[in-house]
Length: 437
Ligand SMILES: [Zn+2]
Image (cartoon, rainbow, N blue to C red):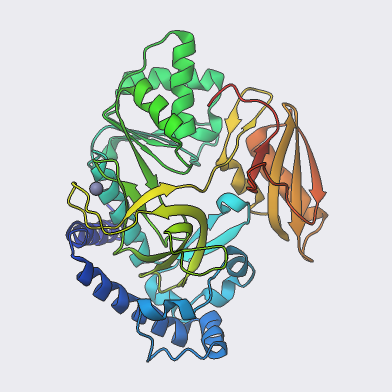
């Protein structure tokens, strides 16, 4: 085994025990810890991160007098657009000493974003994920089936087996009628104990099984991630797989982790990041409902302070305790991230995997994909001065990789993206009916 892999495994282990212990802290201990971490991040950012050096000067923030939670409101919120356009200014002068791992995301708004996640944050995230999955009945080595947007060495491969982890991964981008049957057969062969992945993909497999009159192997639990889980979908999944469903929320920027415990309550990992909920005026929400904002404690290579995650949540009011014993605060609902789906002429359904299509389209600030016929989509784009014909070519190439060549694609430069009736501006908007919930 490579030395770097062993080091990462050791780092994850150490942090895993940290989460095991810190989830039982009392309120006072969390507050002390959060204040300490916030002070450290703010001081580090003030000395080493160009964006914050300038911002703190502008707002006259003295890092030595910064007290933590109670002074957080003095720092303006950071949005994705600022992070994207001024990305280099967020990289700490001494980033190399923390380890540089690049990560890309387009999030639910279709804005491409490239980030550094340092070694410590990577280990913290994996440890938090491990702890969260354990709440759902997963332990390392348990036979697991995962369906998400993976990229394998062989781009045509539907699945890849990882024998050491007892894990099978399936590429959700290739899920369609004939591959669904193949996947179904494999599931019945593998007989996994745990399923992890996009709720829509997992549900589609069971619906294919139902239509074909084939039994599907029941599992112990399903951990859903990457898409908002509606109550209806949860119920359908529980019925189809005769198991309990646990929803998991995290994102590439690594400033929040929320997961459901065995009592199906959502807990936010308070020793991973400091999270706030703000209203439409960027003030702390009095009701606990609003946009989720996060400050990561550990990413010193590229610290994000008061980052506007872009998902709406509702925090549980008061300090009610969960019978599971975890003292992490509870989140009643994650409202955001409701994307629609595209249907391809060859019968595939694609959700937020499409977002990465925009990754190489230079100058596209915001984009939106609208389907108005099975064989036609158009892309609304808000662009900046670096946008050119080349950007469209790169965007189309990204889309073709995922959608194939049968669908017609048009591109429009617009001032504003289209909104749904409920006022949301989704990245994917479908104006044709769906056969699947
Ligand atoms: Zn709980």
